[in-house]
Length: 563
Image 1 (cartoon, rainbow, N blue to C red):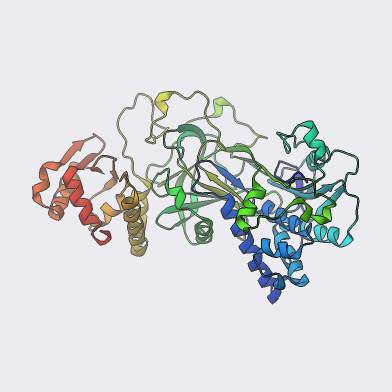
Image 2 (cartoon, one colour):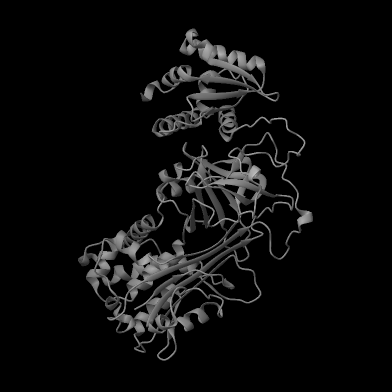
């Protein structure tokens, strides 16, 4: 059989609210654990945080696809292997509850076609097959658990029928790469079709002047892409585990979805920290987003993507450690023994504060003037963006490592591609350097004023671990410097950054602060290093440069507990 299609594409569908199954019984709890374990295993296989390329995944579509795949099988041993449980534990009652659990998100986010209505999420499930054999129990399970419709196509081309059925012919690339002959060889298709279309998305909309750009550093470290950004200043839910920062923004709801956009990025701008992110950390940060809020200047990239994952079945094999599943095992779809088994994931996503119903003209676009005293959250390096429902379910996961999912600026000036972020509100003739307060500097001030010492200590611990594990030894050390040398809050430290060279640059607002800081550093490492501490005047701020052996001595003192 070729292929099992797990496809996501834009449709126009309206909400169909349904009651979820009772979760109070013991068998339901067991089914919930089995399903969570299954989805976690497969998601880990798909969401490769250590790779070099961007990845997209819809948990809603994945659950439905796995459920319809299992429902199409008779072999109990192989179903148990996929589920990761002993075959004797897979009773009929448990299997029924597993399908209810796998179908919950599909039912909760199930939509029917409703022309003329704007829809953020669109979803439909169906199976198409040339086999006309009727199995009422099979079809009932598909309908009740996944709202799946079974299409019988004994004569017609399955590829043509599926692409036409999903959205009246709007999905044209579900079987891209297949020749006309290969399309006619397809004997069955299992399809979950979804789209995520967020235009004019903020619940509290950004004004029309919040149009800007940013320089996104790709995982390769040598590629810097100028991308289109959405910008707004607001009071955001925020969570922080010391290594990553997460924020959430409420999205407009047409049909009562109560959705959030969640963005997670490294505390220190980095191309490699994303490799330390995992699904457990994402879930933990999402859960903590309900605890705190902070006013932030936020810049997020516009997203306009269409991607096709044609190795989904291989990843299921890897996750479930099963190598013997073949087309013949999907016995409820008819005789498929001579066909290869494949699954295709197709996703389209649009995330753009500019509503297509009310587009902006070039004349309406102006530069962004953020509040200079408000901390910035700028998504300019590899990180995570997701769509989450009111219960914390991740409906869409985007691991962004390059510009493949982003809207890039065509033919940017080479002078614009600088690794330092600049304030777009600066006029061309204003060449005065600005005080560049890092997120960590502003974060520290907020935490210190709230006396959140434990948060500060946790962040310091993470900073030291990150720094010592980084062979290039560079990064933002503002929190550590603040905490060690500014307990009395007499100094106004703007930032403290370690370069690839053996040197740390600490920026302060005044010459008096620079002199006091130099004195405090020498009291810690010794007066013999005085010649290796330089003071620089940058008009708007002053810098203390701790160089060479002086930096080695300071680093040893700062990280003494980790040596």
